[in-house]
Length: 159
Image 1 (tube, rainbow, N blue to C red):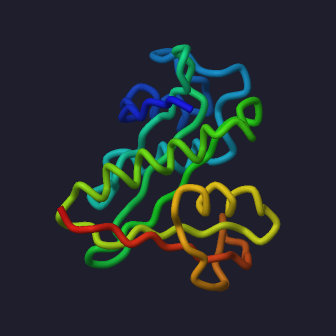
Image 2 (image 1 turned 30 degrees about the vertical axis):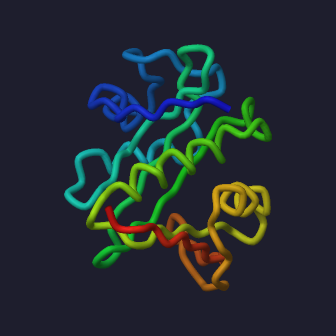
């Protein structure tokens, strides 16, 4: 699967934060994703990696977003989401691989981590296919609610 990661524009983030569909980029009919609002809020954050919109080739449509942030020295936690219409087609796996490759080129990143809810095994398969290893389970919160998640990690070689 060929995908392109492009930085989320200020206009896209502003539209999402207003609860509107972006007009500066072409988006899939079922965009935004369930996490678009949270991702848009991270645009411009000091410790942010991205966020990026995901475009699946061929075609100009934005089908999701991906990004991350430093959680400690050398450690970046990532998150991603794609619209339902492209689930199961390798888009999320390709996007995670592309972001991991970008992060591995950075001298300040040693490890990339991610968390997947227990009730979303497909999200874990995405990470596994992208080379992440399951390192355990932990209690987390999502939108203020407690959730049990699987913890995943990918060690990257320093640039």
